[in-house]
Image 1 (cartoon, rainbow, N blue to C red):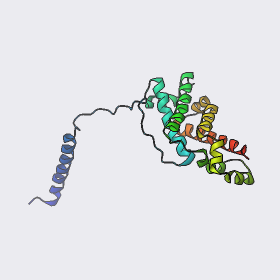
Image 2: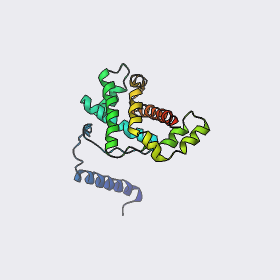
Image 3: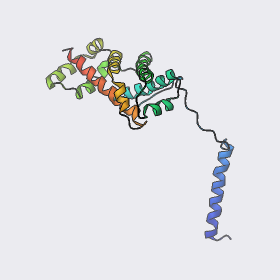
Image 4: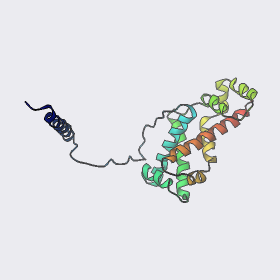
Length: 201
């Protein structure tokens, strides 16, 4: 009978051999690094967030893919390049802006762009308006808001007004790219919505 202390290494060896055997049987005997996804191939982009934050998160992810496609680089290479210190080129700025604008068009075409009335409460929560005006705007029927405000037009205007050169110049690392662009777009959308909603009253 094998003593208990001596049996432990034998059991461990059997378990390791089982794991290695399974890996080899499933093609784990060769190592190939994962290839970067082709940014020109449309992919499904989802967001964990709701409302304007979720909208802008998807917008930025799709926009960066489109920018990378137009520049002929991978998404990873573009985000790494944009996060480097130094001045951004006109082609990088133009590609990112056009990518974001194109993302708006895609979201409108596939029906994933929310109506303006769905974003009103969130926009008003952070708007610098008096309470009476906010109450009056919230009382507007959804169809009235949607007839006066088109989400794609609000987003287009917000994106065109973004100072992308300054924004990208303040990045410390590549992980901040999506976050910082997302925050900037979110703020611009809220400002644009609240300004245009004010004109409805």
